[in-house]
Length: 582
Image (cartoon, rainbow, N blue to C red):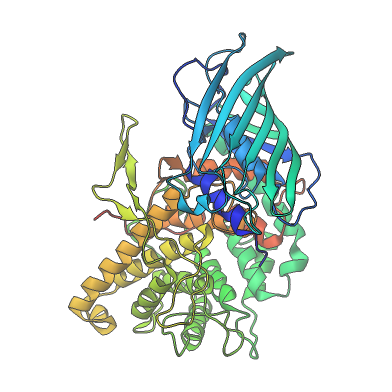
């Protein structure tokens, strides 16, 4: 995996966790008066710098109007991830008010002292100054300066910004529409080999704006149709390969294609072919196959409930003998691939000795849940072991977060009665004693939350006799409590690190980005909830995907296009549970 300097990681933590306080006076000058369902995509026009250390230039920055307060502060870990553009855009947004016309200026302070990881890389405090400069042809421009210096602090290798830091930027807004048009300037800092200055230039590339949710949903329908055609064009990637064909079939069925559709029928035919030497290509194949088989039996009434964000009280799946036999085979295969030394955990399953990970284990859990809903027996003890073991991928501690419970009819937010520790999940854990989780990411935290809620749902679907076989009464109570607490704390981490513009916690914001959004969709279905914190995860994610759809209707690779479509079509079958508080 690509790695970034510690300084940049800490810098990103600052920009994600901090926001720019704005004084009430003097009154600011430009209103963000565009509709709430508005998203901007700004693209880097300046060349990438040729430096060993220093800020990374993101290729694009996503800004959502819904993530801006009335004061212009960005209210989520938004924009493009680890980049100087992240900071410039964050500062540039703080120019709201009524209308430009008079030369005004104001100041703000970015205080980093409450963010210890950032203090290792950048000054304790950054002073920001804003000044209105001109209005021409309906475009208002402002100049922004941000400086900081810890005095005697010296830059060292890996921490290029610990010394003096200075950012100068010119910001342009479209007065009529109320949105940002460009951010252009310089980023000056010291490295251990001397002073460095980098120019940056981000220009508005595209906009998606809708008057209301109904208008956005109509466009999403068209976007899904275009995306499915991109999957059609990717036939060479999934034809004659059962793991990719399973993902294609699952995507087609939830994207609205009928089983009689030619491409859907081809994918379904491919996934049922027997391969004695290698019955399942890998664990992802088993998971996608189980979901694809189940999708054939989901009726219109259930799909309507899911599209509305609701959970059916029961699932009806009348599998054919062939589908039931295939589902049983994949469950047996999953059981045979459980790690002997780490009960409940799975690897790719392609060869002995492969390291277990949360992503593969999650797909195994998805397969077990689909099989359970289809009436196929789950191996005794596997649900229990998986719940116990997946906890090892989660951080042991984290900051307290007041998790959002929902929104009242009045529009006010309702919070849980008690705080939860924001504890994220990682992809791997160390092999030490005891094992330690790695660094948490958004995609893996979503996977961890989903796995815990799925296992709880499977266990609660068992009858009394089966529950006794799985575990004893007292053990079951404590096991359920721990899994629920784990899910709650994972949700708290997602809330604290919320963004739909990049995958939080990764070295580059585009790493596993579409997989991360698909994880958000699963979390929303399993919780079930329409909000992560004070944000509508579906509306935000859909806007980001609409902005990033390619000219061919897809989102890059075949897998990424499928993940994007599964998000937009809200493909995940909800659990029968509700993510509760304490």
